Image (cartoon, rainbow, N blue to C red; front, side):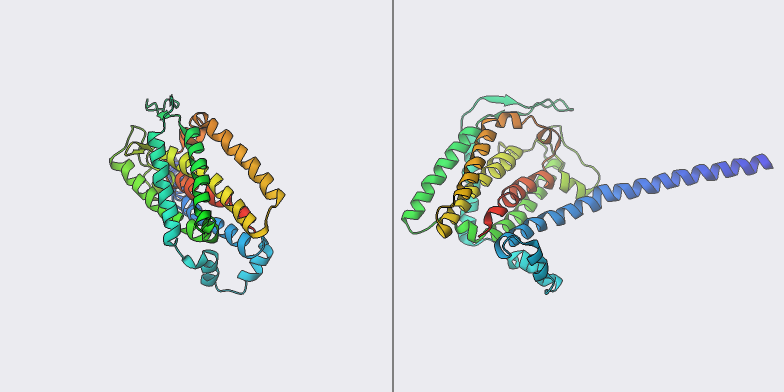
Length: 309
């Protein structure tokens, strides 16, 4: 009888341990694959808009921002931070979509040597055309020509500065659509064997379902990371510097920082083939994490301090 009681207690003890481990595993999975990505997807667009509003409306002062928000309701505060939820004007949309088409065409037609990335765990070897530097030079020259043309006709590309909040919000919504398309594509029409689901729709949307997706021959990660994020960043740097010149005339600190940044961008594109062998390209799938980050966070967050008037 004592042995049976002891065996029963041992069984109950092990059962409780298994149940506890299962519960902890469920809680960990819920946090890692649902709550954490949801919080990041809500927080990240908000912090970009907060930085834009702080730079343009409160003289870069977070204390002044806090004082202003304390007098508003939650909805009023969010609406103000997001610029009244106003999407891009037709003019800004023409600039945005026109650039995307221009960048996609350059990525497809510009010549360059063929380079490869590291072999993936499933045996796939990504292949690229190393034309990033040429695309970058052509883009900067085209921007200079467009700016000259617009100035001759009484216009200016600095309209993007005046409507930057609309551009950020529109890019965020556009990136969500892109990420949804990429998630579904990875489920049903993957480009390479490096695809799959984590079992969570939310985490699949956040992290992505494909490592190296291509659409109409365009490598998605090359486009979002290099042709858009890392190219729009220098374009906005130049546009915001031009806006500073229009408002204040020549400010030496602005042009020193602009020169240093342009040296950095030029070095990046000269080395682009090396970037395609870095850890984030090798391990990060094409989802919200990397696509929203390059479509919105890189050109939005890193240029916001230059929106200070």
